[in-house]
Length: 254
Image 1 (cartoon, rainbow, N blue to C red):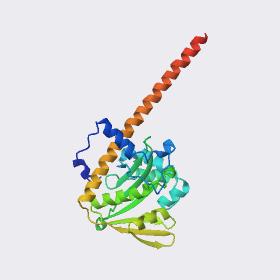
Image 2: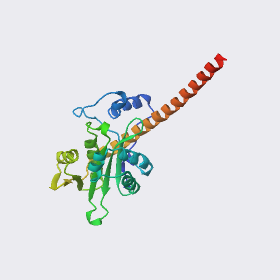
Image 3: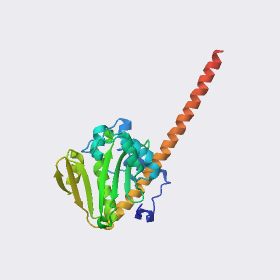
Image 4: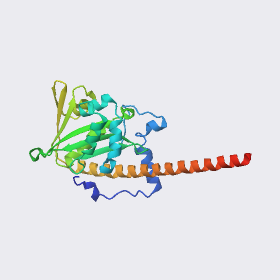
């Protein structure tokens, strides 16, 4: 995987309980609104989204996310009605050393959205990359796809990419709308469209934004992982307590 400059940035003091609580409240609430019955409209959007770089150990979650897509969503994402077997081969063939794969997790550590930034394997087109994205149905309308796109463009700029390429079906209105709003040139050829977005050179602002995003997303993931482990422990404890109560109840009837 290409070197990430975020490794040189000093992380915030995550041991302070007030910091952790404020980060949890302000940053991840929107992604987990469906778990509490709240709804975030597209006009409200998400102020910040914890987008995290994925690694080979996330392949099972990636595959689960993609297989959960409805047939029409698979068709729009891959350009053909991908079967479970084809999705499995796609995930197996992901090159995490060359490409960048980003993801968004909810508080249960389920992957609810992901983007694939694929760099050219041809040295002649070394400054080009292709973008693909998918968002779980229950998370749409919150601007997640847009934020994944902007995150990918920032990351691509910082890696020296000058042209971002998007190949999509012409009926994939959402994806083409994102590209057009970013200033991409869209060319349609029958049922397929190609979008080309010229990226400016990296600057201090894009580099700092990339560093900060990576740091905050890592903190968010660790928070969610700790909460997930605690909920599992609490569930096991409740089962034990219930077993003890049931045993006492049975013993009391004797």
